[in-house]
Image (cartoon, rainbow, N blue to C red; front, side):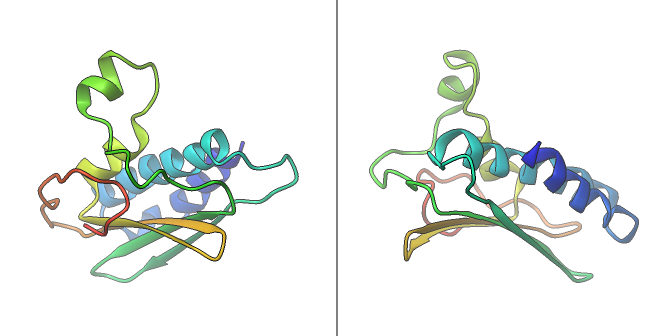
Length: 134
C-alpha cells in the first residue's frame, strides 16, 4: 500500500511534468518505497517519509526511513544478479540506470535515498556502489 500512495502522489504532478519524467518518477518512487518496506526492518507502526520537489528543470524525489540502512561494503546488484539469478532486487538497479542523479545518505539513524529526473537529460554513466551520489 505504501508504494501505491507514493505513486499516486507523483501521478498528481503528471500534468505538470514531461511525460517520460512522470512515468519514470512513478516507477522509481515505487521501487524506493518498496525497498524501505521490504528491507529496512521497520516495526509495523513505523513510517516511511517521501518528498517531491519539482521545477521546470528537475524533479527530485527523496524517500527516508529509520531502518537498518545499507551495508556500505555491498555493491549495487548487477543486471544478472538483479534479474536472472534473483526474483527481486531491481530497485536500486533501476534507479542507477534511469535517474539522472541519485544518492543515499545515512545519518542520525535514518536512511535517505533520493533521485533526480530532468527532461531531456541523459542519465549519468552507471557506476558501482549504491551509497555515493551520482
